[in-house]
Structures are given as structure tokens and as C-alpha cells.
Length: 290
Image (cartoon, rainbow, N blue to C red; front, top):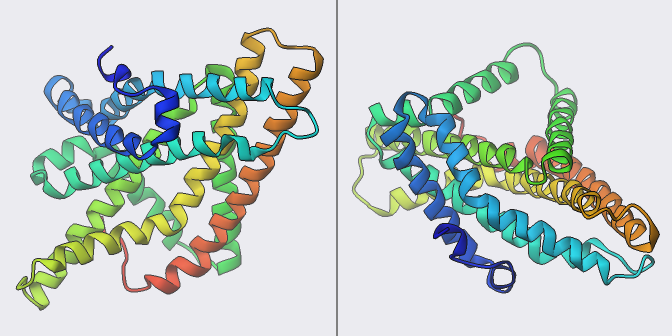
């Protein structure tokens, strides 16, 4: 009751940056609770606690966005009306990611192996898939796009059947990305400490910002696509829960949802192009070595 009452939907849409700090709080609490109660399974329990804490706000946001369609005309409905909701989702995701990345950096190594064990294993499996075989840029691009489309499909399906079910997928992605960021930071900092020493504290901030940019350059587009798709599935789900199967209102919601799905697919393709052609060019000397 306390956590879900910190901020309402209307306040969150007016000041979405508050949700960023909410994400920091939720993720930090999730880490300590999972370590305290379920240490051996902390890497997954942490994600579930993040989902549980965020669920009321996200569900209320879905309902609030569905109500917006009620007042829109069929010919005038546009994804633009959901920009404020997407800001809430993105700020929440960034709060999750930054908090988990910071805890990955500052926690002792033995705790890191407990809190992020599943995420580290996932990153290792992804790296193996990307480094085995003769992979061209075009085949790499198609592989990334197909994988991201699968995740997008799951987000839409989960949102449709479980309302805010896609929140687990998004919280999990935040934990994996934050693990990659934290791991890259520790590796690069150790490398610089060996070769250059750590005479300047500014080096910490430089490495951390580069680590974030390395994964967020394309990652933000991917996550935005997942949120757009999740919103589409959630709108249809809420319409069916409210028994809006007929009339102009249901047609408006369906058109809005289809527009959102098409937009999410376009963003997925853009994210794939950035990941394959732009991110390596900008950060060619920064690789993850879990």
C-alpha cells in the first residue's frame, strides 16, 4: 500500500522523472529483500519484487490510457496520445537499470554472484551465440531483429492475457542490461587501473557513462518498442475486460492498438540497425567479458 501510493498516474504523467527515482527505490528494495529472504534464488526473486512493486502504477496507467481512447474519434486516434504513458515506462526502466548497475558495481563479488547469477549466465549464452560461426553484418542484423520481434510478440501476448504481464519481461531485460553495464564498468576500470592507475576520480564517471551509452544507444529503442507493443496489448485486454466488444469505441481501441504494434515493429528495425552498424562504430573498443 505504501509503495503504490507514492505517486498517482496523473502526477506521474505530468512529472515522469519522479518515476525514475521510483524505479531506483523499487530495484534497491528488491535486491535487499531477495538477499534477505531468498538469497539462493535472488537473481529471479529480485525481478519478481520489482514487478510486484511496479504493478499497481503500470496497471493504472494502462487503464488511464484506455480511457483516453474513449474520448478519441476513430479518424483522429493516434499513438501521440500515449506519449506521456511511454515516458512513465521509460523512466521506470531507466530507474531499474541505473539502480541495478550501481549495485552491481558496488556490491562485493560474492553478493554479485548471488544477485545476478541468472543474468550473468544469460549474457554468457548470448556472447557464445554471437561469437561462434562466420557471422556477417547482414545475418547478425536479421538474427537480432528476429530475436527482438519474438520478445515484442511475447510482450503483446503477455499484456493481452495478463494485463501487465509484459512487465516481467521488461524488468528482466533491465536486470540483464544493468548486469552488462556493471560488468563492463568493472572490467574496463580494472584494465585502466592496471595500465594507467586511478589518479583521477573522474575516470570512474567516464567509464560508467561509456558503459551505459554502450548498451543504451540501441537498448533504449528496443525497450521503447517493447513498451509500445505492451501498451497495445494492454489496451485490447482492458477493452475486453470492460466488455467493449462493439461500437465505435472498440473500433477506436483496435485501430489505436494496431497503430501502436506497427510503430513498435518499425522501432525494432531501427534498433537493429543501430545495434549492428552504429553501436560497434562508436564503442568498438568496449566489449563485455563476463
